[in-house]
Image (cartoon, rainbow, N blue to C red; front, side, top):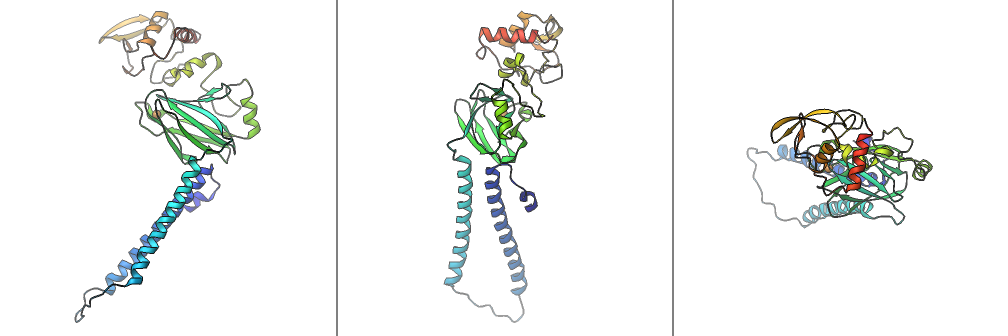
Length: 314
Ligand SMILES: [Cu+2]
């Protein structure tokens, strides 16, 4: 266990959390060993012997002071280290770089102040980062195990999370709040880059920086990504929870309407209906009732753009 923590931590919060954990576990282990050994020793020393006369033991003031004093000091030091670790997580440095996070079933979206929008979190190394997080639907929780940080993301309320990454690299981001059927797929990554590389990307026109992380979003289909469509619909024909957008327009398919099968050809009218009222019909072979109704999420202009983006994927 100690070996595991001996290498440099990925973030300052990881360092703070790990040292508190090592301290508490070490104290607990010492106490466990001490108490168990003493107990076994006493079992042998004071077992019932023939001809032995028991004696009454009266109070010992020093013994009382020691066994109240030592645990109190131990618990207070645990509190002190724990509280300092907590401050490391909750104190936001003044020069923190802010990124707005939107969570939705089942996708993370990162919005930078200059308008850049990604599904992977890109951050510069050794720079304090402030994530302002909000959900558009149910409760989620942003969890970065390597940094030892986790915070709930709640609809209608902005929560924050702050960290400073100390090592470049790519680390998992998961959702730690059960948020529906594809909760376990709500994974993405945080990519920590050297300062110059981050600035170069941040100030360029490019959507994704030159890292080996594959990008879901492309300029022409960015709205599909922004509105969360690509979480369930692939753009390349691969199978996801819902039919792929690739080659969708003009395609023949069987749908279920009120329990009966119908053959339809995908046209603009069908797309409009299945986006605005997704529960009216379900494509055979897919689970009904999963897609959120988009009536209040899209305006006419956005709906038209989405339909033409789907059209362009033929
Ligand atoms: Cu979630």
